[in-house]
Length: 116
Image (cartoon, rainbow, N blue to C red; front, side, top):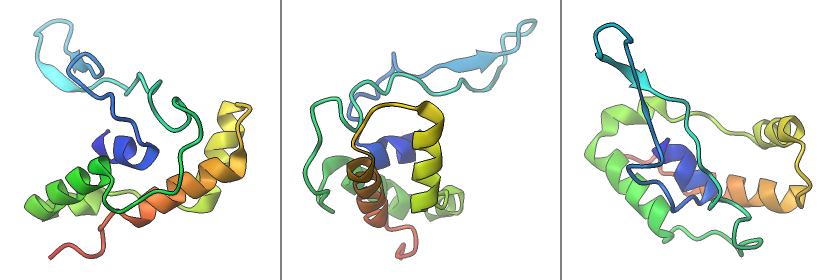
């Protein structure tokens, strides 16, 4: 969830924007609910300019990965084709290449291969 927010520029993740799944009989937490509420992401405030490595979400994510390098094994691989496939599935009218460039640019700043 944090990775996705960093890559799609979603600054609106807070305690009311994620959920937990619980066992109906015991109440035991069994995992995170599917993520939701991305209305502040990507094009919510118009088409953003060029991504920067100093972007707060990217910086915070990279700091988190430096603190917990064992989590870097869970960072997914994202390719341009991945983004194209997602855009095809959601079928939104957007400037496709701008979205592709934004996501791939932000993904390029994730320091998954440069963790000390």
